[in-house]
Picture 1 (tube, rainbow, N blue to C red):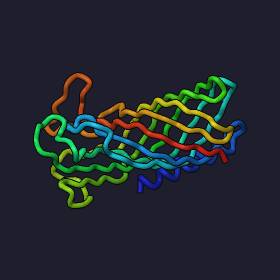
Picture 2: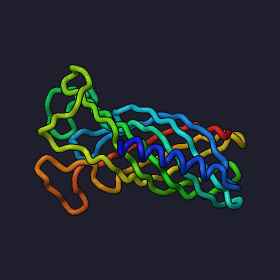
Picture 3: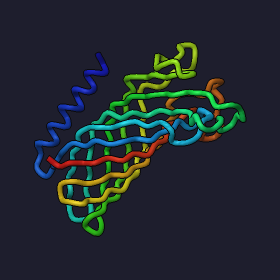
Length: 208
C-alpha cells in the first residue's frame, strides 16, 4: 500500500508542477547498461530499459531545472564469454534485475543553443527484485542472503543534445550515493560500505 501511495503522491505533484507557469513537459524512453559495484563482476553487461514523464522549467538561456518520474531497470549480469573478474574460473551465469520507480531532480545548464549539461540526484523505490543463478530462469532472491534496500539515492550527471526544439537526446551516468545492499559479511572499507548501482543510460525526450 505504501508503494502505491508514494507513486500516487508523485503523480499528483507532477501534475501540479505541470500546471504552473513556465513548466513544460513530455515523455521519454531509453536504454540502460548497468552493473553493481561490489558483487565481484565487472562490466556494464546488464541491459535494461527506462520510460517516464518529465517537467522542465528553463529560467533563461543558460539555466533551468527539471524533474522526472520514471520506471528504470538496473542490475548486473555475467559476461558469458569471460571468466569472473576476480576468480579465475570457468564462466558462470548470473543475472540480477532491479526494477525502480525513480524521481530525479536536476539542474540544467544550457550552452551553444543545442547542448545542455545536467546534474543532480534522485529518489528511487525498489519494487521488484529478480535474479537468475545458473541460467535456470528468473526468480526471487535467496531470503537467507543480504537483502537489497528498498530506497536508493542515485547521483546523476549527463549531457543532452537538441537536434530540434521539441526533441533532445540524453546521455547519463548514475551512481548510488549510499549502498543498495551490504556485503555478505557486513565488511566495510572507508567509503566502500557495500554494493552500489553503477549505470550509463540513453534517452530520447519528446516535448508535448
